[in-house]
Image (tube, helix red, strand yellow):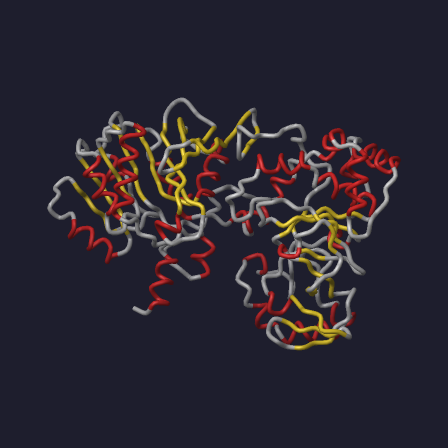
Length: 519
């Protein structure tokens, strides 16, 4: 098998085998930290069986060990390795369709059960890209509705699916689950705990360096969950090697925090403005353009095209552009074929034949976009577009960076942001400047860090940003700060005290969201 094929199979199965020495460390930690003495141990997605082997050494009072593995080569390896153990039962099966009743009927619910392992480190969308058959059921298991169910929120880590499947299966047992996974998986499980048919009585994360153990660049942990009648809404985070407490996250008074100890809640609430995600087109080779002068552009295929700006071509800012408090010069442009989602695109031919012919010439690439959102949509459709997209001024933030920076964004034409960014649109620059200043105030950035998970791929999402009550923020931030911030912007704006008072008055009304501060 070639190196490329091996890597593809590794991604398909999320195949990061646990080193034997690390498996021993995990089992010893479970025995010592929790005083575990399980009667039964189950290792789902067992690979070559390193955890079963380690568990047999650490938990020598256990009388039954079970392993499940889809890969026939790994299964054969584990079977050969453990063939002399009469208390080990292995199954060459798919964890997503496995019938657990054959194990359950051998377990006494009053006995301690340990579910131990290292589920795949891969998302369902990555598997779909590979056309993999090793996938969970296609149902929307998180229960999202509308566009959320088929775009970003519909994507999930397969490990999360497996962990929830196992906890649900063994909800009535005296169960401890200990899994190696990305920290975002643990965060999502604790965040969504009110959706489950089981009760988590305790949850802990022991974080370790995944690069050292698996040569994977991500934040990872041993996630340990114990089921019981008393529900806990918190998860403790420790250092794997020292057991030193790092932080605690979870629910408090009905609100979810990434760091309970350092929480800031003076401005907790609901934003008076709706945060929007940028435009989604899924075809950067065609839709994104670099200006080369005289209304000429070069696309990411290396082709040159001459197009007019302002009707269907607009300045574009991406996450990597949002690094300062004011941005007005774009290095990219983007084609916007619609003003509203699902708007008819055939009108482009009569309004701007150059754009139409350009899109038609790349129809094969645009038709090849895999996301289901483009199915049955008008030709050349995009998403994340509406009246709000065409506002003159925007206050935007990248969803990716750990340090939150809110930028005042504008240009000679309405500016578009890509779908890695979030923004509020304004028609008046004074309102945009004030909001930019408010959002960059230390109180706001501290609040964001107490509710966002900085080890996530995208710490700042619409869900997080909507929790900023800007009206409350105005009560905490005086005019002097606003004025000084405005003066330090590139254009050196001079604001008057009455302008801040007018803004505060407008957003203090109950119908603030209906104010024409944005389109």
